Amino acid sequence: MTVLSSSPSSANATARCPGSPGRSGSARHARSGLLLMVFAVALSALGTGCSARSETTAEAEGTEPVGIGKEVTMPIPAVTTTVVDAGDEPRAALRPVVAPGTAQQVTLRTDHHIEQQINAQAVRDFSPPSVTIPLTAQSDANGVDLTLGNVTSPDPALAKALLPADGSQVGFDINELGAITALRLEPKPATSDAARAALEQAFYQAVYQSIAFPDAPVGEGAVWTVRQQVSGSVPLEQVTTATLTHREGNLLTIHLNVVQTPKSTVWHLPNEAGQLEIVDYLMHGAGDITVDLGLPLPVSGAVEVGGNQTYRDPQSAVTLRQTLRTQVQWGA
Image (cartoon, rainbow, N blue to C red):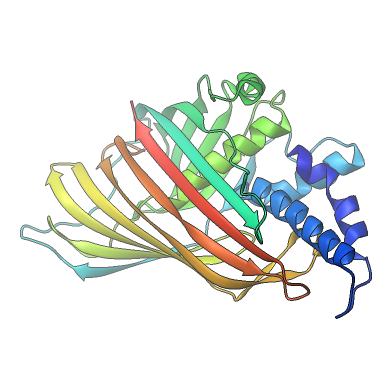
């Protein structure tokens, strides 16, 4: 989050540099440098959700970030499910049957890899450190409440920053089809901005790689799609194709195939730095998860989504290429 609070003033100053069709190489280089900085800012904010802007503004003004010491709720876009193949007989409705007060211990691990390149410059790695989050989940009438254990990361600085987050509260509001409708975050007051951002990013990734059940009865081999908008600097439509590969009582094994496509032809850069044309955009992934209908969270599994994008600055000859890979894992 540090780069977010320090970049707007310099970015806006550079953006006001004059330019014309015959501008000098130094001006073009300055534009390239601006885009590199703005791109880095945008990538650092990727997946951190709607609270990033309020925290950044507070940091810039030297005040306490919004949400410190209180719960912040972020609504999640609604999903639409469609049955493609109802599968084999016998068929039955897939519904969470989690009794209030049911407890579960599970570990969430997220890994987000980001590389970007401007023109022929060297590839730069903006990957945030992975995080591993032990969770104690307890179901309630609206979904599940989560208590964080000792969150760890291979990055020493982030690992230290995450120590005060032990005991923080997170929650998912879940509807009758198992779709997450809201994400609730309440980090401990001593949790730093860097740790808060890492946790928020991790849970957003987990939310968008979760699964909703179809409304109609299905059996083994059933296939259904889950359509959802993914919020972010580039709004995406995500279509997840789910296949029920095995069912034994309440225990389901589901294969997921994920495709993301942009809903716009441009990317509006942060800090009013202009926009980039989306030249191409390919994001695809797959994985398998095991779900117990009697427990609030997945039992195990992993889903990985990745791909490449290319963007062009209409004000210059600058082209930006980006490679992304996100993995979400559930386990003991």
